[in-house]
Image (cartoon, rainbow, N blue to C red; front, side, top):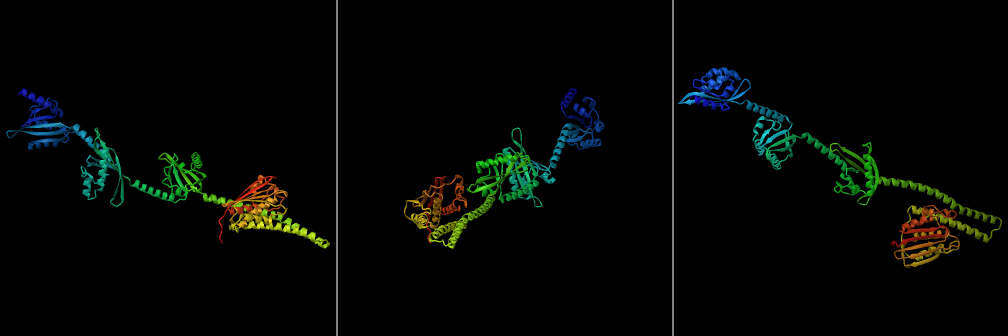
Length: 631
């Protein structure tokens, strides 16, 4: 029997739990070492056999947090005589036991009691720490200003914080369920659930975060904007074991974005309605934006301009001016000031444009990069207006000069013939008073008076021609005429002979038929040039006139052996009242070639002059065959 008890004691001591076996009288039958250690009994197990368990329980009661309850619970257990498993017992020192009870029944009666105690202090402490940590993190998640939810791979809720679902009962209900079940519970459409499921599956398949924006309607009917993410968590094998759902309210951001978009829209509308071109370029001089005024100004579409280099749309020299302006502007100390230049170019449609270019720089500190803003104004009308004004001023100046020249010319050219006429008349009166008037003297004085009157008539005629030309009262009316007949008639009437007795050498070549000719204009041209050839050449010199006639045009070449024209005077040949330096002592108004040039331009003709001092002058005119005017 002793051997048997030793064997049982050995076996019981190998068990990690504390074991106490009592008989029906509650005397110790067996107890192991773990029991002695657990209840701090200072005796070996074998010495405890036969001890009274009731007395021992009272001695050990103070070890428990609630001693009276401990003793009462033992009596209740014994009275019920029913097995108990994992009864929780808390000790006074903070330890935790689990107790099992098994009644020993033999032949229908209670033969003893088996008590098993398990020290779970460490496990309960760990569980409490885990629970505390769980509560700590849960509290953090509940107080985050974001919707936090954990999902299993089947998209069922494992956890959701208070910000996600405020109602505690609903928060508890949703665990293990999905958005479709929530939609059925709330009797709402499943569109949102379908959208979330698609994005959730995408996160699972790709194994990466999926971000999306949701728009919901609040109870008050206003829109609520949320930015959500599905973030999959993977294990060592790369399989997704959980998905974190994260959402934040972006109402303020959305409203600011909408206000920004509205402001941007208003700003773009303003830019779109500006007559001034506004474009932006990046650091590589690539156009990133341009408003529609560009199309009207430059002829290029906005769509074919954006993302293209600035150099594409400007001539090389103009582009270099703009680039230089930009670099000069960027390097200025005062970055608020604007760089400005004026450029000239031909746009896509061939229109000449004068543009004023202003440069401004915008710094984006967030992007840590800057953009250059280029403002281009079309100042073509302004430039042309300034030119027109300058021309008007110059014209006024020229008119004043012409008036002065006219007065000088008239006072000089008219004073001489008037003086000669007056002197001749006085001579006639003197001869008449002295009875010396005879036929010879009368003819001489009469001829002298007639010449001066003719000279004055020519001056007045030239002035009248100029007046009519300036007032544009002369109208070209070509008629079918023979150039040969017209030129012969003009020369025979006045220049055959010239007043000094010379006659022109006339040569005709080419077509003998009729062409479209304005007789009046032709007469004034031929007369003025022929008169100059005689007037500015010596009495014994020769004047040659060669006429060449074709079916589509005709030309006249004058060659004289006169005084010639200085090179410095060539530029003023067609200026009113301007005469050559070497012609000041020869009578003339300086209007002859002005009249010639005007008529030639009206006839779509041209004139070319070459001259050598003291050797003569060559004048060539060419006149096209003009369409005949039928009256």
